[in-house]
Structure formats: structure tokens, C-alpha cells
Image (tube, rainbow, N blue to C red; front, top):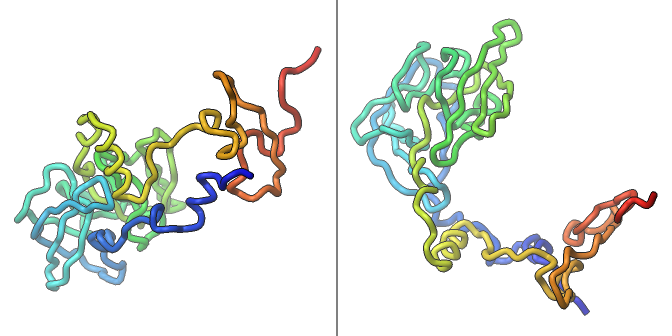
Length: 241
């Protein structure tokens, strides 16, 4: 009798696969849109958050409230940033994408106005403003994946590039380093392909010599953890003449 697949064990939500959110530094988002006038703030500290790849900055606003944002490259303790305002701004300032000039580099972009920022948040990530459609109130943005998207012109973003861009330049010399790096975020490592496993662990496993695996065809109604190989395929194998 076979074992449950890795995807099925992950879906049960046991502690091994859970993200340890109790160690994270809290929500990283912009203040609510209810603030109508431009608000300034000073950077109090820049810290590391175990739950993300880029550092975070704690900002003390003029009304003595504190927020946390993803720190841009070049931000230092004691610097001032501004939320809202005109069409220009220094690195770290938060503006509506519709107010920024074409070619401006931004990150932590809101999908809809007021959601706090959803896109381009990883270390070293940045997008660029491409064009504005003033009639429809939309802004065209080139994402880090080279895909172009349209967002509401009132959506906010931070000017600059997310800090920590050199993270991937340092190699993982030992396997244990990768293990603990993934474990921090609730990821299982290493991940082995199905045909390298035993037959009781995966439908593609069990070969006594190197092989490409069986072209398993599963029904579209199969539970998610069992969906491997060709899902609801019309046909498999070499086409006969």
C-alpha cells in the first residue's frame, strides 16, 4: 500500500509545512487612503524580517503613528520620506502611480487602491512606469517578469528599488544552509522528482534503472494531491502513423 504524496501531506497543514508567522515583524503595508493630505515621516530603524527577503524600515509619521515599509536601496536611518504629494519624489517616497512620470522605477505596487501593496516586493525587485491612460484612469507598468499590466492610477507604489538585491549572489556552499533557509519560511527541502522515488511514494517511481517515468493519465476529478503526469489527457505516447 502506497504512501500519501508530498503535496497531500503539505495540504494537511501540519507544523512542518506551516509558515512561522509568529516570528514575523507584522504587516508591511501603506497607511489607509483616508489620509487625504501628504504626510511626512522619518526612518527610525531598518531591520531584518525572517519572513521576507528584503529588509523593512520603521517610519514615524507626523501624527506620531508608526508604519513599516519595505526598505528601498539607499535608505538610511534619519532620512525623511513623504506619502502622497506631487509628481516627483526621492527614493522611498510613496506616490500614486498615476502621478509618476514614465520610466520611474517603483516597487511594492498596489493592485487596487488601498490594499497596502502586493506586487514587486521581493529583494532587488522593481517595476517601471510605461504609460498613462488618463481617460480610463489606468497606468501601464512593466513588471520584473517583463510582463506589462494595467493598474488603477490611484494605486500607490514606492519610488526606487527594493533593498537586498545582492542576496542571490552569495552561493549556498553547504546543503544545511539551504535546509535552514527554506525551513524559516515553512518550505520542505530537498524536493525530489517523482521518477526518482520508490513506487509506494509516487506513481512515477519504482524504476530499477534510469527511465523517463510512466505517462500516467489521471482523471480531472482526481483529488489535487494525486494529480501527477498527464491530467485528463486525450492521448499519450508516440503518435502512430
